[in-house]
Length: 166
Image 1 (tube, rainbow, N blue to C red):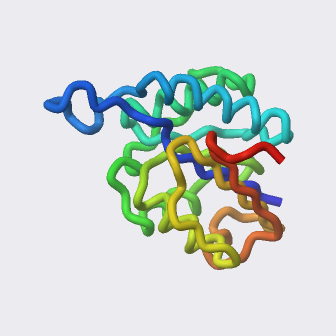
Image 2 (image 1 turned 90 degrees about the vertical axis):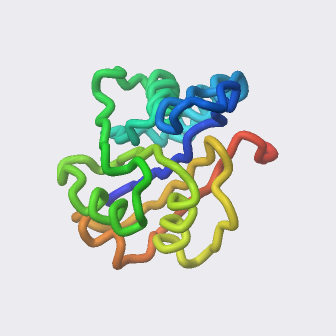
C-alpha cells in the first residue's frame, strides 16, 4: 500500500511586500497551524516515511513544523526544487520517482497546483480549494508510486485547520 499526503503550506506573511515570493515566511497563524496539523496526523497514525517539500521558505517551514510533531528530524526532510512553481505534470513526475521503499510520503507545496493535483488524483470528490495547511491523505493499494496517477485511491481523508472537529 502507498499513502500519499499532500499538504499546502501554512499561512504565509505578506508583511514585506517587496520580498521575493520564494522567501516569504509563515505568519503567526501559520506558525500555529502547522504543528497542529502535524499533531492531528500523528493522532490518526498518519506518519510518513519521507517528507518532501518545495524549497520556498513558507513550505519548508511548514514541513519542518509538521515533521517535528511527527517525530521526524528536520535533516531528513527532502527539499525538491522542482515543486516550487511546479505544474501538475511536474508533481506527477516527482511522485512517480518517490523511493520504492517509502510506503507513506508527505509532500508540502503550493496552490493552485496542489488543488489541481488533488482533484486529478482523487476524482471521487472534487475539492474547490486546499486551504492553507490543509492535508489530503490518499491511500492506494499499490506497490509502485509510478502507478498512483493512473489509479483511484482506496481511501482518502481531508483535513484543514478550520475544519470542525468530528
